[in-house]
Image (tube, rainbow, N blue to C red; front, side):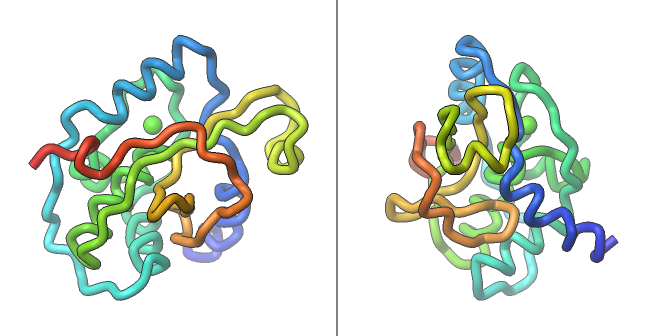
Length: 164
Ligand SMILES: [Ca+2]
């Protein structure tokens, strides 16, 4: 399983979650900031963003949904054990908050056709992908590493996403 995840890491990092329609973008934006309660899951001690991402990756299997599927909060995702980029990002934010005390923001990149990132995601026009953001820099929730080349399409501050 670990080996499979290791192989999947670079693929997941560069693969879009969803091909979006305009109305789906609106839905996604709204769903991502609607009443996602924080979840203190008694997480193990962690020191790095990579450890947070590894914990999330160990506890959530990547299963892609579509943009009209409501975004699950961290408790639901960690308990049911699956989700895609938006669930990974919300879970990452939640775990990072409880283990590192850091508030990542929820962000999305909207990759325009012809951009350098587009070659990684193949044909099909505009692709959306949820990530986390700290101090204006995007980070992948899949590995905790910065993605400085990806443009930020929109974001919500931690305190806008989570209600305590
Ligand atoms: Ca999802």
